[in-house]
Image (cartoon, rainbow, N blue to C red):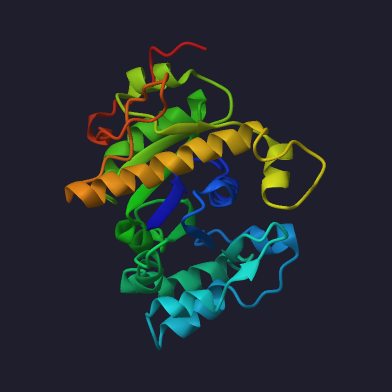
Length: 278
């Protein structure tokens, strides 16, 4: 399974979301996080990782082979054991690497994601129609759009949803942090919200193995939310495979039982968030 995580405005924490999902992904699958952010990666600096192996070395290897095994040769491990392929810190180098990797339809990431029991979480950062990461998003089994539940970000999201809906036929929408209630966002934008991730720095640090001074993954707010979202994505993928029809990763949430796998109506989004309440 290949999942692309991205944003349309600001920095809602796609990298943290990808790591949290990887840390809490169902045990029967092996996750790996690949930093595909054209603005440059955060993992190398955050965890003091060496520059290689990483996205640059993967892009070079992908010139010769698109087999799934190539991806695993460029994985590093975080303190908690999570497998990651770190992107270069600089935007110029990141865009150059993606320029090599992505035009082939992200074939290496796609091949790895097609392996049984594997999920590739591609952190594509802030995305626009000219993003070099767009071929990866198009090749993904799901596109997860993240946004803070605030006026400034939601207004931009509302205006860009129609365009974003053309990038991938299986989109999902995830809110991050405090702000408008989930039901308000669903009503005003006429979209389904797949899940919500809290702003939880201590929980994120523990999940990623960056710190031991915080709540356990089972007890942290981020850990619990990431577990629900991971199960929702995995379940939706299974439903898609069983039905052999367009998957429905976004949903108008059934708040008593969690996300429901029904189509996300991005094409019906309004052009503004007028009418929402603080």
